[in-house]
Image (cartoon, helix red, strand yellow):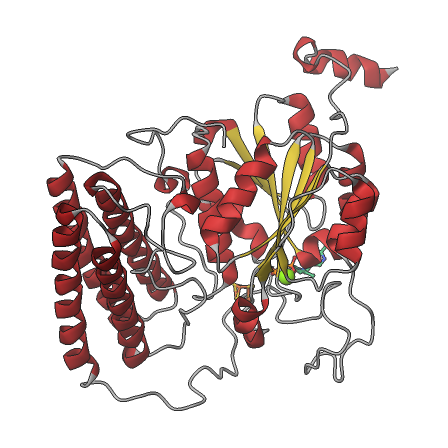
Length: 279
Length: 170
Ligand SMILES: Cc1ncc(C[n+]2csc(CCOP(=O)(O)OP(=O)(O)O)c2C)c(N)n1
Ligand code: SF4
Ligand SMILES: [Mg+2]
């Protein structure tokens, strides 16, 4: 890790926490993810005013309200579009998108694919609980086909989406999976993801204890990857497609060039844009 | 395990982080219980945060200030998180005092086991002495908690069932 050991840390994770009290259910995995994000930002010594946290809608998407960083609680599924615009206009900011499996893979599936493809330098953190938590327990694209519930008796019968494989095929430059019950491990993944150039995708398995109480046992199911991350997309693809969905660690480190703004945004003021539009 | 804790400096860094994270987690849980209108449990967690803060202060006294820190993933815990914190995922908005106290008791027991393990494995006599002292304090807390726990009835098996789920729609 390329960071000198500091005697007295400049930031603690409290510096990133806002005064707004989370309304998540106590025990929700999203608490662990929030704490990992703040630990990662503190480790990287990023001043809160140099970080923007952008989200869509869902329990997972509430994080912008809970942080002292800049925050944008956007439209359902569209957070990557907002974040892309922000990063291109303000490249000096560290841009983090916080999302859920419904937000990122269902209504936002198309935005997810094209954000991977564009490869703008930002980090997408998806808290995956395999359910729509906020709207009371509907199956999401990552819900197993046979998950039986009052809302989908006998299960949906539809194969779950494979987000990491889709991210790889779409061009994401960094792909990893963590588990909210291991906040220090997730903080480590986030540090690597933020430092890696281009579009980084981190899926964090984050139990919804209210609508998927059985996910509490994920702590017994997750297992760390036994192999080093690869730079070869073919190797990564093989690993991802043969994976059980519970392996944690970094799967892929790409080296595609990042997409950056081709116009100098600093030279444009609103009147110039207005003139352009009037044409 | 704990091979890295062979200097007093590294030991105090671990002890500080363990106590600091315990304070932080108890404060978070107190907030959560306030949000979910459980004032009795909020008070319990605030009390625990204040007790653990005394330990933070004690470690800072021993270290002559705030000890240096490690990267979060470089601490030598035997658990996914520092041992004296209630693990993420174990809180619940329908828990009762018995469950809350059981979780707190488990924290004290994990902390005791951690310090005892350090004492057993270190080659440094100063680390051993300090670790044994910390382990004894955690044991004392655990004994006290067992007495408190005996005052509260165990919950029914379906305590977590709720016909009116807690989350509002957006
Ligand atoms: C345009 C639009 N469609 C639907 C909704 C209803 N809605 C709110 S959150 C949500 C799903 C959120 O699920 P997920 O992203 O998995 O987040 P979680 O709550 O599980 O963390 C839906 C469908 C909405 N707010 N806006
Ligand atoms: S409904 Fe589920 S995802 Fe939402 S806060 Fe509660 S436990 Fe978390
Ligand atoms: Mg979800």
